Length: 268
Image 1 (cartoon, one colour):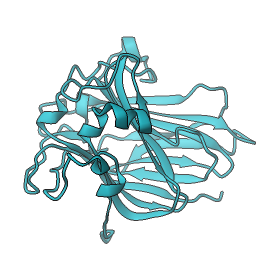
Image 2 (tube, one colour):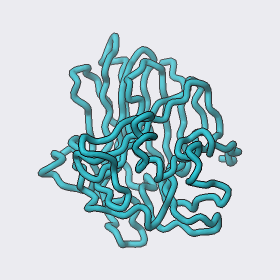
Image 3 (spheres, one colour):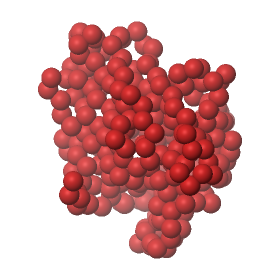
Image 4 (cartoon, one colour):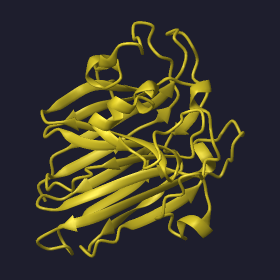
């Protein structure tokens, strides 16, 4: 099948220190804990979901998932032939993969909300907005950042931080032109800025997320379910230092574009 690649790589990350030499100290997800490839082959509105626990719970130095649990899902929204034209997700070889066939329209999600089968269901398909128990992200970071290796059609993604079910901040990333080897950053301050969130995503019914008290993190890929062919791969999600050249005081840096920078793709 004809597929057009959208690759997100190394370091969808969080950071706090203003010094470029500050060290990272919180792993969000290294994608070293695998989840076998699965498909959604129906357009019934119900996502296919999978959950996995980290075999090395925090504070083990081998811990690789915040909250010790990751849930992934894929929801095939439309397709002319769901059995053969569909979408899939997996975590293998240290990366997360989302693939959508030409003419299919699907949405994929990754969420970090702890492990609670009673709330989330056996497959992790239901978000637990307080599952992380109130983690303070400000004590380890001040930026979300991630590298787009290639996206020949552009891409759309929602990044959502929850404090609880009624306090959350959603910021939409939307690139409408091809992207290659480029790093984007989202400041934590953006998620606590009411005007910015209102203009670029939306808040919970009771207000914004408090990044001193985080209950869940979620990334929604292709949230509009558009029918572009997609191959998407995400690498490590970790804490990183804020570059000294970036200021959180400028509204331009609350979003993505002003902090985007070119990267050279490392040799395989």
